[in-house]
Image (cartoon, rainbow over all chains, first blue to last red; front, side, top):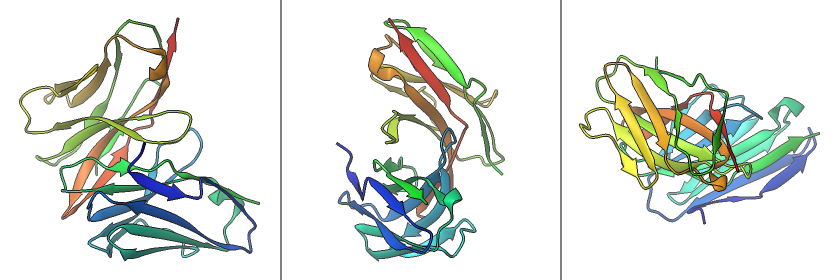
Length: 112
Length: 116
């Protein structure tokens, strides 16, 4: 079982909807990440939070809004998405800078 | 900028045989880390093995070993005694340190199919 939990597993939303993806870890990790993965492509970094502060934003459109309420939780708020935003969204966490990222099972998002 | 190259889009291996998945990288950093992840069709990214640039020994984790050749900038994954459950996409990734967080850049992946 993965130690990073993502909900929901699947999400279908219209272009005018507002929804949120949730991620939780209890490994004491202080860095958390959002990645986006299109079919048959590698994951692409979206955001990095370090000690609950946004440290990297890879020029992601403002219709994606991350939030880190505490060291265990990471949210991704979605608003006015486009069909091309349909993808697998992966959350990850890591400890020290030399340690691996631990990924959740992902949320498969479909925008209609 | 860091770059990871995986030149094998797909590989086939017979059950119980060994297989090598290739990965080359390019970086100007002296300190870096290389990772291999497995992604089954379910979507989860599973960490397999890590090699630091200053590690003198090749990393091993069970049936996985990393053939690290620093001068050639290659970090190939070797899977011994392949099992049907090894069928998945495999990604090589390089870490870029940004203070307290690690930013991973992934290669394009190799899809491994284990056959009977």
